[in-house]
Image 1: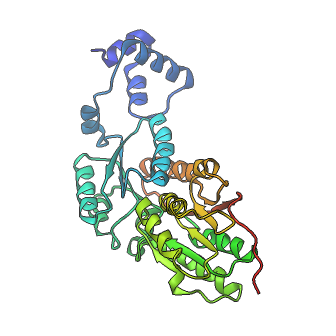
Image 2 (image 1 turned 90 degrees about the horizontal axis):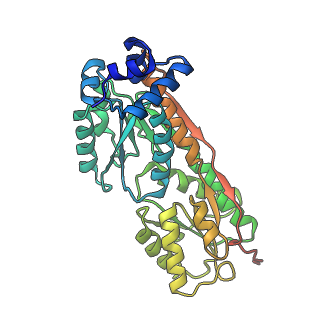
Length: 335
Protein backbone atom coordinates (compact mmCIF):
# COMPACT_ATOMS: atom_id res chain seq x y z
CA UNK A 1 0.00 0.00 0.00
CA UNK A 2 1.35 3.41 -1.00
CA UNK A 3 2.31 5.89 1.73
CA UNK A 4 2.80 9.62 1.94
CA UNK A 5 6.56 9.02 1.68
CA UNK A 6 6.00 7.33 -1.68
CA UNK A 7 4.16 10.44 -2.86
CA UNK A 8 7.07 12.56 -1.66
CA UNK A 9 9.53 10.47 -3.67
CA UNK A 10 7.30 10.60 -6.74
CA UNK A 11 6.76 14.38 -6.64
CA UNK A 12 9.95 15.64 -5.01
CA UNK A 13 7.81 17.68 -2.60
CA UNK A 14 8.21 17.90 1.15
CA UNK A 15 6.09 15.81 3.51
CA UNK A 16 4.65 18.98 5.08
CA UNK A 17 3.29 20.22 1.73
CA UNK A 18 1.81 16.85 0.86
CA UNK A 19 0.26 16.44 4.31
CA UNK A 20 -1.24 19.91 4.14
CA UNK A 21 -2.95 19.13 0.84
CA UNK A 22 -4.21 15.70 1.94
CA UNK A 23 -5.75 17.29 5.04
CA UNK A 24 -7.68 19.85 3.04
CA UNK A 25 -5.21 22.71 3.06
CA UNK A 26 -4.37 24.98 0.12
CA UNK A 27 -1.11 24.49 -1.76
CA UNK A 28 0.30 25.94 -4.99
CA UNK A 29 -1.54 24.85 -8.11
CA UNK A 30 1.47 23.07 -9.62
CA UNK A 31 2.03 21.20 -6.35
CA UNK A 32 -1.65 20.20 -6.20
CA UNK A 33 -1.51 18.80 -9.71
CA UNK A 34 1.69 16.90 -8.96
CA UNK A 35 0.25 15.40 -5.77
CA UNK A 36 -2.99 14.38 -7.46
CA UNK A 37 -1.09 12.76 -10.31
CA UNK A 38 1.05 10.81 -7.84
CA UNK A 39 -2.02 9.75 -5.83
CA UNK A 40 -3.63 8.37 -9.00
CA UNK A 41 -0.45 6.65 -10.18
CA UNK A 42 0.36 5.06 -6.84
CA UNK A 43 -3.22 4.26 -5.84
CA UNK A 44 -2.79 6.09 -2.56
CA UNK A 45 -5.82 6.16 -0.23
CA UNK A 46 -6.19 8.29 2.86
CA UNK A 47 -6.52 6.53 6.20
CA UNK A 48 -9.59 8.46 7.30
CA UNK A 49 -9.60 7.05 10.83
CA UNK A 50 -6.01 8.05 11.46
CA UNK A 51 -6.58 11.46 9.94
CA UNK A 52 -9.71 12.13 11.97
CA UNK A 53 -7.91 11.21 15.19
CA UNK A 54 -5.13 13.63 14.32
CA UNK A 55 -7.22 16.52 13.03
CA UNK A 56 -10.42 15.99 15.08
CA UNK A 57 -12.26 15.92 11.76
CA UNK A 58 -13.73 13.04 9.82
CA UNK A 59 -14.18 15.12 6.65
CA UNK A 60 -17.69 13.78 6.29
CA UNK A 61 -21.05 15.55 6.23
CA UNK A 62 -24.12 13.71 7.49
CA UNK A 63 -27.46 14.07 5.72
CA UNK A 64 -30.81 13.19 7.29
CA UNK A 65 -33.81 13.22 4.95
CA UNK A 66 -37.43 12.05 5.18
CA UNK A 67 -37.44 9.84 2.08
CA UNK A 68 -34.61 8.79 -0.23
CA UNK A 69 -37.12 8.67 -3.09
CA UNK A 70 -37.88 12.39 -2.77
CA UNK A 71 -36.59 13.94 -6.00
CA UNK A 72 -36.32 17.40 -4.45
CA UNK A 73 -33.85 16.43 -1.76
CA UNK A 74 -31.83 13.88 -3.75
CA UNK A 75 -31.13 16.50 -6.42
CA UNK A 76 -29.91 18.91 -3.74
CA UNK A 77 -27.69 16.24 -2.17
CA UNK A 78 -26.12 15.46 -5.55
CA UNK A 79 -25.26 19.12 -6.16
CA UNK A 80 -23.87 19.55 -2.64
CA UNK A 81 -21.85 16.32 -2.76
CA UNK A 82 -20.16 17.29 -6.04
CA UNK A 83 -18.74 20.41 -4.43
CA UNK A 84 -17.86 18.79 -1.11
CA UNK A 85 -16.05 15.92 -2.84
CA UNK A 86 -13.84 18.37 -4.71
CA UNK A 87 -12.91 19.84 -1.34
CA UNK A 88 -12.04 16.50 0.24
CA UNK A 89 -15.35 15.74 2.00
CA UNK A 90 -17.65 12.75 1.67
CA UNK A 91 -21.35 12.41 2.51
CA UNK A 92 -23.29 9.89 4.61
CA UNK A 93 -27.02 9.83 3.83
CA UNK A 94 -29.63 8.57 6.31
CA UNK A 95 -33.26 8.03 5.27
CA UNK A 96 -35.52 8.31 8.33
CA UNK A 97 -38.72 7.14 6.56
CA UNK A 98 -40.53 10.33 7.66
CA UNK A 99 -40.38 9.05 11.22
CA UNK A 100 -39.27 11.42 14.00
CA UNK A 101 -37.88 8.60 16.15
CA UNK A 102 -35.76 7.29 13.27
CA UNK A 103 -34.65 10.85 12.54
CA UNK A 104 -33.39 11.22 16.11
CA UNK A 105 -31.58 7.89 15.84
CA UNK A 106 -30.01 8.94 12.55
CA UNK A 107 -28.57 12.09 14.13
CA UNK A 108 -27.20 10.02 17.02
CA UNK A 109 -25.61 7.59 14.53
CA UNK A 110 -23.98 10.42 12.56
CA UNK A 111 -22.55 12.01 15.70
CA UNK A 112 -21.06 8.64 16.65
CA UNK A 113 -19.42 8.66 13.22
CA UNK A 114 -17.97 12.07 14.16
CA UNK A 115 -19.38 13.89 11.15
CA UNK A 116 -18.25 17.48 10.72
CA UNK A 117 -21.70 18.81 9.85
CA UNK A 118 -25.33 17.75 9.43
CA UNK A 119 -27.74 18.65 6.64
CA UNK A 120 -31.36 18.01 7.62
CA UNK A 121 -34.75 18.27 5.95
CA UNK A 122 -36.53 17.92 9.28
CA UNK A 123 -39.45 15.67 10.13
CA UNK A 124 -39.47 16.64 13.80
CA UNK A 125 -41.47 19.78 14.51
CA UNK A 126 -39.62 20.85 17.68
CA UNK A 127 -36.03 20.25 16.55
CA UNK A 128 -34.93 18.53 19.76
CA UNK A 129 -33.30 15.78 17.70
CA UNK A 130 -30.60 18.31 16.75
CA UNK A 131 -29.83 19.58 20.26
CA UNK A 132 -26.99 17.10 20.81
CA UNK A 133 -25.33 18.16 17.55
CA UNK A 134 -25.55 21.83 18.44
CA UNK A 135 -24.22 21.19 21.94
CA UNK A 136 -21.24 19.40 20.35
CA UNK A 137 -20.57 22.40 18.11
CA UNK A 138 -21.46 20.54 14.92
CA UNK A 139 -22.82 22.97 12.29
CA UNK A 140 -26.35 22.18 11.15
CA UNK A 141 -28.00 23.28 7.90
CA UNK A 142 -31.77 22.96 7.52
CA UNK A 143 -33.23 22.87 4.04
CA UNK A 144 -36.82 23.33 2.90
CA UNK A 145 -38.27 23.52 6.42
CA UNK A 146 -37.47 25.86 9.29
CA UNK A 147 -37.97 25.14 12.99
CA UNK A 148 -38.74 28.34 14.91
CA UNK A 149 -36.98 27.41 18.16
CA UNK A 150 -33.72 26.81 16.29
CA UNK A 151 -33.65 30.22 14.61
CA UNK A 152 -30.25 31.81 15.15
CA UNK A 153 -28.71 28.46 16.07
CA UNK A 154 -28.77 26.64 12.74
CA UNK A 155 -28.11 27.65 9.17
CA UNK A 156 -31.11 27.45 6.86
CA UNK A 157 -31.77 27.45 3.14
CA UNK A 158 -35.42 27.94 2.25
CA UNK A 159 -37.38 29.06 -0.76
CA UNK A 160 -40.17 31.62 -0.75
CA UNK A 161 -42.93 29.03 -0.69
CA UNK A 162 -45.70 31.54 -0.10
CA UNK A 163 -44.70 33.60 -3.13
CA UNK A 164 -44.37 30.50 -5.31
CA UNK A 165 -47.82 29.21 -4.37
CA UNK A 166 -49.33 32.66 -4.80
CA UNK A 167 -47.87 32.97 -8.30
CA UNK A 168 -49.32 29.59 -9.31
CA UNK A 169 -52.81 30.32 -8.01
CA UNK A 170 -52.74 33.83 -9.47
CA UNK A 171 -51.93 32.31 -12.86
CA UNK A 172 -55.05 30.16 -12.60
CA UNK A 173 -57.20 33.10 -11.50
CA UNK A 174 -55.90 35.21 -14.39
CA UNK A 175 -57.07 32.41 -16.71
CA UNK A 176 -60.60 32.79 -15.37
CA UNK A 177 -60.66 30.05 -12.73
CA UNK A 178 -62.55 30.68 -9.51
CA UNK A 179 -63.01 27.21 -8.01
CA UNK A 180 -59.41 26.17 -7.47
CA UNK A 181 -58.40 23.13 -5.45
CA UNK A 182 -55.03 22.71 -3.77
CA UNK A 183 -53.25 19.56 -2.60
CA UNK A 184 -50.96 20.41 0.30
CA UNK A 185 -48.48 18.41 2.37
CA UNK A 186 -48.99 17.23 5.97
CA UNK A 187 -50.57 19.68 8.39
CA UNK A 188 -48.10 21.26 10.79
CA UNK A 189 -45.17 21.13 8.35
CA UNK A 190 -43.46 24.45 7.56
CA UNK A 191 -43.72 24.14 3.77
CA UNK A 192 -47.37 23.14 3.98
CA UNK A 193 -48.24 26.23 6.00
CA UNK A 194 -46.31 28.54 3.69
CA UNK A 195 -47.84 27.13 0.50
CA UNK A 196 -51.31 27.28 2.04
CA UNK A 197 -50.63 30.90 2.93
CA UNK A 198 -49.70 31.69 -0.67
CA UNK A 199 -52.86 29.98 -1.96
CA UNK A 200 -55.06 31.93 0.45
CA UNK A 201 -53.35 35.24 -0.29
CA UNK A 202 -53.83 34.87 -4.02
CA UNK A 203 -57.51 34.03 -3.59
CA UNK A 204 -58.31 36.89 -1.21
CA UNK A 205 -56.22 39.38 -3.15
CA UNK A 206 -58.43 38.66 -6.14
CA UNK A 207 -61.67 39.02 -4.20
CA UNK A 208 -62.26 35.29 -3.78
CA UNK A 209 -63.11 33.50 -0.56
CA UNK A 210 -61.05 30.33 -0.02
CA UNK A 211 -63.33 27.32 0.45
CA UNK A 212 -62.03 24.76 2.96
CA UNK A 213 -63.59 21.96 0.91
CA UNK A 214 -61.15 22.74 -1.91
CA UNK A 215 -58.11 22.39 0.39
CA UNK A 216 -56.90 18.81 0.90
CA UNK A 217 -53.85 17.60 2.78
CA UNK A 218 -51.57 14.84 1.56
CA UNK A 219 -48.23 13.49 2.74
CA UNK A 220 -45.83 14.56 -0.06
CA UNK A 221 -46.04 11.09 -1.63
CA UNK A 222 -47.45 9.81 -4.93
CA UNK A 223 -50.27 8.10 -3.03
CA UNK A 224 -51.08 11.32 -1.20
CA UNK A 225 -51.42 13.20 -4.48
CA UNK A 226 -53.52 10.41 -5.97
CA UNK A 227 -55.97 10.38 -3.07
CA UNK A 228 -56.10 14.17 -2.91
CA UNK A 229 -56.98 14.47 -6.59
CA UNK A 230 -59.69 11.81 -6.32
CA UNK A 231 -61.28 13.78 -3.48
CA UNK A 232 -61.12 17.10 -5.32
CA UNK A 233 -62.61 15.68 -8.50
CA UNK A 234 -65.76 14.82 -6.55
CA UNK A 235 -66.40 18.52 -5.83
CA UNK A 236 -68.92 20.33 -8.05
CA UNK A 237 -67.59 23.35 -9.89
CA UNK A 238 -63.90 22.46 -9.65
CA UNK A 239 -62.01 23.73 -12.72
CA UNK A 240 -58.37 23.88 -11.58
CA UNK A 241 -55.96 22.25 -9.16
CA UNK A 242 -52.58 23.32 -7.79
CA UNK A 243 -50.42 20.48 -6.42
CA UNK A 244 -47.61 21.49 -4.07
CA UNK A 245 -44.82 18.94 -4.60
CA UNK A 246 -43.45 16.66 -7.30
CA UNK A 247 -44.48 13.27 -5.92
CA UNK A 248 -48.05 14.43 -5.27
CA UNK A 249 -48.16 16.01 -8.74
CA UNK A 250 -47.35 12.61 -10.21
CA UNK A 251 -50.06 10.97 -8.10
CA UNK A 252 -52.61 13.62 -9.14
CA UNK A 253 -51.86 13.00 -12.81
CA UNK A 254 -52.31 9.24 -12.33
CA UNK A 255 -55.71 9.83 -10.70
CA UNK A 256 -56.76 12.15 -13.49
CA UNK A 257 -55.72 9.62 -16.13
CA UNK A 258 -57.70 6.84 -14.44
CA UNK A 259 -60.82 9.00 -14.52
CA UNK A 260 -60.17 10.15 -18.11
CA UNK A 261 -59.92 13.79 -17.04
CA UNK A 262 -58.67 15.84 -19.98
CA UNK A 263 -56.14 18.57 -19.21
CA UNK A 264 -56.70 21.47 -19.70
CA UNK A 265 -60.12 20.99 -21.37
CA UNK A 266 -61.79 19.58 -18.25
CA UNK A 267 -59.29 20.59 -15.59
CA UNK A 268 -56.38 23.02 -15.48
CA UNK A 269 -53.38 21.82 -13.48
CA UNK A 270 -50.23 23.40 -12.07
CA UNK A 271 -47.67 21.11 -10.48
CA UNK A 272 -44.45 21.46 -8.59
CA UNK A 273 -40.79 20.89 -8.82
CA UNK A 274 -39.81 18.59 -11.69
CA UNK A 275 -38.73 19.90 -15.07
CA UNK A 276 -38.44 16.40 -16.58
CA UNK A 277 -42.00 15.53 -15.61
CA UNK A 278 -43.33 18.76 -17.09
CA UNK A 279 -41.69 17.94 -20.40
CA UNK A 280 -42.67 14.26 -20.59
CA UNK A 281 -46.42 14.36 -19.94
CA UNK A 282 -48.90 15.66 -22.48
CA UNK A 283 -49.93 18.37 -22.43
CA UNK A 284 -46.72 19.90 -21.12
CA UNK A 285 -47.24 20.80 -17.46
CA UNK A 286 -47.03 24.28 -15.98
CA UNK A 287 -44.96 23.99 -12.80
CA UNK A 288 -43.56 25.96 -9.90
CA UNK A 289 -39.78 25.51 -10.01
CA UNK A 290 -37.34 25.61 -7.12
CA UNK A 291 -33.63 26.47 -7.47
CA UNK A 292 -32.36 22.99 -6.55
CA UNK A 293 -28.85 23.50 -7.91
CA UNK A 294 -28.51 26.77 -6.00
CA UNK A 295 -29.72 25.16 -2.77
CA UNK A 296 -27.14 22.37 -3.07
CA UNK A 297 -24.37 24.84 -3.88
CA UNK A 298 -25.37 27.09 -0.98
CA UNK A 299 -25.39 24.14 1.46
CA UNK A 300 -21.89 23.08 0.42
CA UNK A 301 -20.66 26.66 0.71
CA UNK A 302 -22.10 27.06 4.19
CA UNK A 303 -20.43 23.86 5.42
CA UNK A 304 -17.06 24.77 3.93
CA UNK A 305 -17.24 28.26 5.43
CA UNK A 306 -18.43 27.00 8.82
CA UNK A 307 -15.63 24.44 9.05
CA UNK A 308 -12.95 26.98 8.19
CA UNK A 309 -14.11 29.86 10.40
CA UNK A 310 -13.63 29.97 14.15
CA UNK A 311 -17.01 31.58 14.76
CA UNK A 312 -19.00 31.39 11.53
CA UNK A 313 -21.98 33.66 11.06
CA UNK A 314 -25.35 31.89 11.02
CA UNK A 315 -26.65 31.99 7.45
CA UNK A 316 -30.39 32.16 6.74
CA UNK A 317 -31.07 32.15 2.99
CA UNK A 318 -34.44 32.50 1.26
CA UNK A 319 -34.33 31.81 -2.48
CA UNK A 320 -36.93 32.60 -5.12
CA UNK A 321 -39.12 30.14 -6.97
CA UNK A 322 -40.14 30.42 -10.62
CA UNK A 323 -43.19 29.56 -12.70
CA UNK A 324 -42.46 27.57 -15.85
CA UNK A 325 -45.28 27.84 -18.37
CA UNK A 326 -46.61 24.75 -20.08
CA UNK A 327 -49.91 23.91 -21.77
CA UNK A 328 -51.87 22.62 -18.78
CA UNK A 329 -53.73 25.84 -17.93
CA UNK A 330 -56.83 26.57 -19.98
CA UNK A 331 -58.71 29.84 -20.12
CA UNK A 332 -62.37 29.85 -19.10
CA UNK A 333 -65.11 32.44 -18.85
CA UNK A 334 -67.36 32.47 -15.81
CA UNK A 335 -70.40 34.66 -15.20
